[in-house]
Length: 300
Length: 134
Image (tube, rainbow over all chains, first blue to last red; front, top):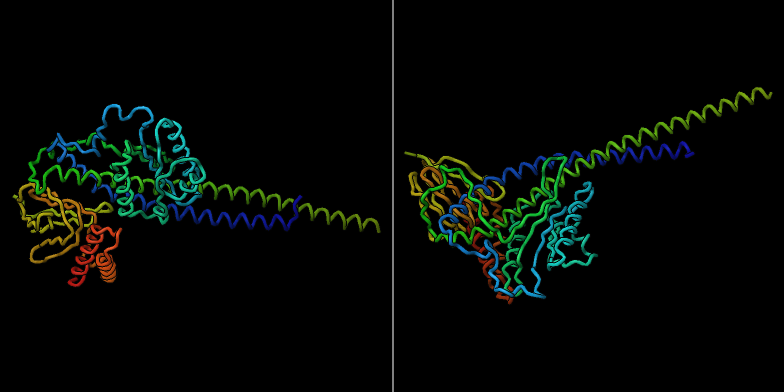
């Protein structure tokens, strides 16, 4: 049986912990709201860009940009010994204490590596947690981007930097990459986040699903449509990455909020249980003392 | 017949401006483009420069860098990487950026990325120009 003193100390310790987890939960909740606002604020840009891109694509349907259709490989170039090259960009958090958030993403990464064991996969790690995890494992890491989501604020400039580097990798003449994937956590709700893998490059088809009334405006192009097109494609990638980063931050905060909420609840339960034991121990001590006094008096 | 232009300035991060204006001058890649209501639909790339918009007799300026503009009869949508109003510009920071960029351009090292330094210098100069007026 622990002594009364020990129990008191433990109750105090758990109460302190509860205070911290509670504070973390509230901070996460406040930041989550801002993160969601940021996701909404980024939407007009994406919509507009897709609209211009869709129009340019319609204007020049014969456009062949490697970013769009993939590299034109000679037959047989992908023969024996020449494996397909793939880059997987993984977005994790910089910090922990957010439940299974990072674990889920890292698991998804390892699943991807297993499924694509026949290809040459390189990783681009965004977020300290992914970097720490894979540093001691036998994987090919191409690049690490650290400290981007740490403050809870993502700047579009960071996304641009990551995007430009990926496009360069993809276009590289020495070691062209065939496909680029992006793995990040999709924000469904504060309670549910889902790791998703998207193919970034090649882009494939541009979806032209606008409203019918706006479809056929006869734009005058100041620059050739092809030039605008090739200028826009990398921007599309950058925007996708920016979006993924925002979603990831929102997911992280949502995950942290739930994790800290249950931690706070658990701490509360522990406090209750400990308090009960403590009271019992105290009562037992009092009873023992009374018995001692009574039996002492009887002995006289 | 539209007599106003709906000007929208959008960056990847947010909608910077949405206002009904009478005239817009955008820094197109091939030179400045003055837009009045009922303009032909047009799409143009932008360069780093100053976007001017007029509402009645009141003229406002804004720094934009890169991106696109889409013009319709009653609207101008500007998609830019950077968009700042004069009051949002940190003049001191721009001054420092200018000095850095100039130093980099004059040092002519092996691995200097001239294009990037040049772009930075251009941005800094425009920021300074705008901040001085504002």
